Length: 121
Image (cartoon, rainbow, N blue to C red; front, top):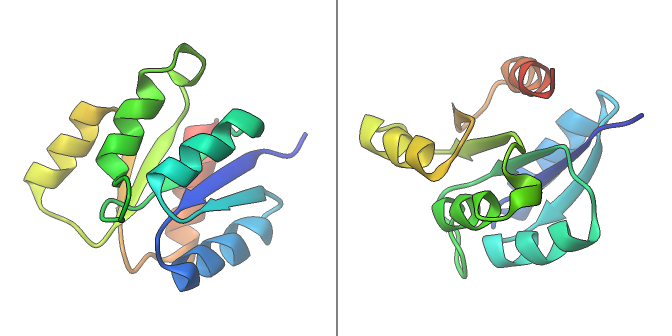
């Protein structure tokens, strides 16, 4: 069965790059422009992995992760942060919120797909 990945980023071009990279490897991809939109969409669709930006309007990535982790059905959902932020303090904040991993933009497609395959088992 195909795995479904949700990408959350306020940049439509970044979402397009992720859709291209992930769908070319056989994943179904669901998009959202911010955390609030992602949460609403997650209620409707079953997803296997969440990839989120950190800095977004309406609801940022850290708040999204905290909201996702507060729901029992998503407690073990793999979540990757994909952001331009690379400071250790931000990585620690992401980990504390419940992020599974951290990828710095701009991303290398092969590296991204390798991480996605690893977290999906």
